[in-house]
Image (cartoon, rainbow, N blue to C red):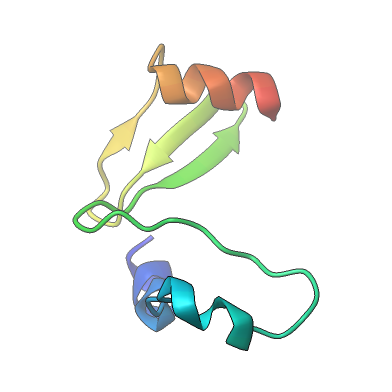
Length: 72
């Protein structure tokens, strides 16, 4: 997760609303980034888990994980 954050998330850039028309036409991958938190959703044999670059893991009956389990 730490390597992913450095390599991929380190290249994220803010996009002001008035710059949306400058994006290329076609399908794009866009997500909202909340400063201060970085978690990756992993799906494994034990079900969905959230993992951060520091190694902290959340599993179990958390509302986000319950919703992820029903979608994945």
